[in-house]
Image (cartoon, rainbow, N blue to C red; front, side, top):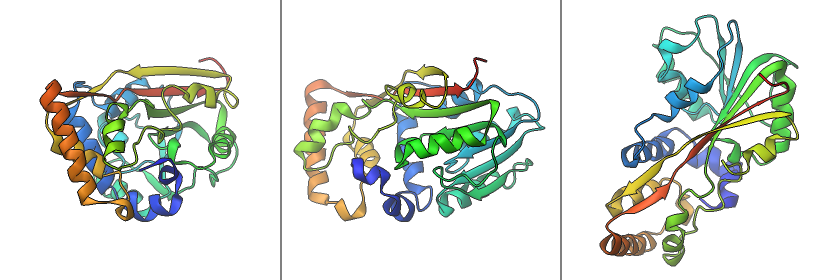
Length: 268
């Protein structure tokens, strides 16, 4: 996935996020290769402030893992709406949570045009998805509009250095590297949020992927390549290059740090 693919709504909707399969492949690979034992969704949920009787909107909820993995910890009086721009992802979220014993509302939503009235939500969440939004300024304006004055916006993302360690190998194999994909990142997220929210906090979770075999890394990379760009010969060449690196160095270590930004109008 190159920079243009990352915001190509037709590709994202009809291929990359047609359902949760590509996302699940990446998540499984990252979890299995990670040197950090902390689950991302548990870590994010720990950092959410949890005022009672809150109305909560999650944008780009994906398969609903933030809620599935923290079911016992969700305040019982929260009114939660899960949204995504992909019907397939929203269907997977519904399937994952339908037997949870908790009520969730599900709605198709484009983050650039949120169909709720002003000041409707106490909490808005957007995890690992803002770099897919073509016009983030529109999304931030909409998020600010639907958020109450004393509300909080939470946005998780990864470092822009993710996969930088293998960018040269991908380039040498003729595969577009991912180094420019993370346009809303750990490094620049606060700067992008600042015009819309006077108070922005950043929490960071350090994480490294330890690569000792070529195939798991290839699976991870392959899950983000559009079918129209896929070329088995290029991946075979990438496998050879990765194996050369592993033979020489024993392992590859990939930076996969994650950040959670908390943004609000007033200090809390």
